Image (tube, rainbow, N blue to C red):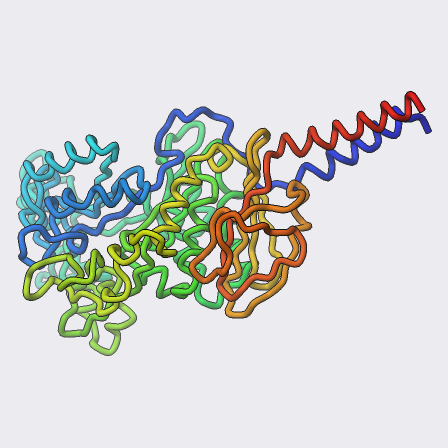
Length: 494
């Protein structure tokens, strides 16, 4: 066999070894649309920051804390509804879409918030609710009175008899309603449906669709007993069903579900933040997740959520959404620095004394917040914006994936979400060669930035998560090619 044939065979084999089986081909488009690579930060205004001492968060409070979002590395703040509302459904019953609810401030306050945000390089997204209005909205009142031009603004049906009210449909919030809830028809960006149905909201060649429907699979499908295979299934289910050319998104929690730290284990906070923020696409953070906030403590008497308060006391702990809505933990002062009021709209969790932003921001502290900041910086690298994704199960509770892009560093994420230590190998990833350097590790990890990580026999502690860097894809490839050509040269002149 000639030396040339040997080199050709080796080169062919080399290509098959280097090219890992990828489950997602990275985007090849330029950084044209800012949102495609953004991190959205959901703010629940009532619980973020109180500026006037009435015990409830407001717009001026948000404005005063925008620097925190900049420090964290956030792209855009998404505000839960701040429009004028009677407050029957926590602000989602809107009576005027063109005005600010006085609980939160004035239009002037809102304009100042926008001005400050733009000066800081932040974007503001409003939670617009087009599906329904409050029964106090002028359109509803005009339609109810059969005013010409407004009769068909709402769907009206006669009651079953002369005493029954019109439109006496059942509502999950259990107060009397006069509107038809048709979430999956209009609320296209928030669809609690199967993945196949949710994908329809992306649109197609003839129907434009939405920018992206929220991906709630990390909320609905995961728990403290989640295995590595469960995690892989959740990731691949979305990516494999997503229409070509669309952008994925990853949501760990929101104001309607128990906090991620409580659902998935406070020990896994860093691992899940790493997992979701380093996947391709948009990352969504609910306020407090950057510091690992858990659900607060709220009693039946203190409850504010109409869905639970209009129900049974025995079901309050499972039905109430108040626990995930308790005030943000800014520091160790009274009321966690949220408010100077004697009583806040929801009680501040007692956990704030040991878990708050001020404590986690201290220099040299290995904290959830410092890890989150590092993740936001990593997300801006080309490998995470344009790179391919390869996901593997390395052990029953160990998931790993690589993000790789020719000419750039290859990154490996490893996460043991279980309560026992285990030893794994990265040999399934053919694009990873040689030793790696630790870039980031969870608070539960004894590893530090710069530590060397071998491919074989990696011992992971319980709940440990690591991000490591293995060097440029391109450099590895051409280093081996150079070696083969040296072999050819030696054959030629031997």
